[in-house]
Length: 361
Image 1 (tube, rainbow, N blue to C red):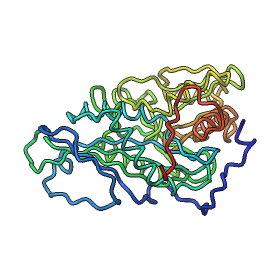
Image 2: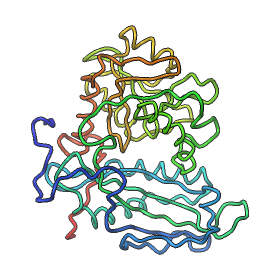
Image 3: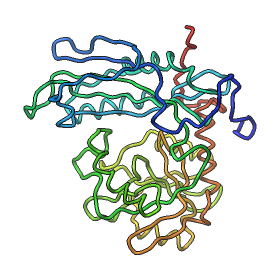
């Protein structure tokens, strides 16, 4: 069954509007605390409320803070399922470990996800293009400006109703190669999801917007030559056409985030008759292979962006068009395949869907 076989709207009686991305928060949050003597304790599902923090809270000053991003989707039968939350739980643990924070056990992570989604799943309309974006957060809560790891922490899980990251529907984007700044360096935190990775990227993102581009493309910090990722998204390059086309993404070097959507697409590519590959790709190679017609399509992917076509590139010495400047068939097939798994339109061969009980349960 494909998207075209069914309407992308399940009739639930809810109004269908564009919720945007990041502002339409749901009514509840889930909280846990950690201390050296008690471990994880005080689990609570409460109404969403503001936090009260001392000005000397460690997380505010030293950035001891990690987060995740995952989504719950309305299924074609009207139920709700979360996509690959176990993988997010494991990545959340890696991020915590990198910042000397306690690792939240997988079962507690999943319990938080289940309880919050069960409480707020009624906010998710029948429009399958919309989702419930979940944001787990772990931060240091000691009140001290001594430069040392905190001894107390708080875990929060909040959610918002999300439309498309670049708007509803499938719109292609233009990107700007950034050669002025670096997102990550070897031995740093580029391969985990911590708060400090993001504020330093805002200046480059602003440069991209001022150049008329939707996103920035980050290069390696050593040579400023190798393509790594976009702002919060992984990149894929398509070589060739149709069955047997290569679907290539930059290899994990320890400086870019191992995206869960990235991993999902590498697995799905082979089932669609494509050849998935991981390799290093330089900016010059990207430009030359587009000019010669070897690279026919490019797309970004991530929890928020899902699969988004990239059709034009700008660099310091000019730019180029990818393919014919329109979303390509391989890109759209990859997006469709992911969409179908996430929404129960096709068999969940890998057990990626974590089903949520109805709210009445």
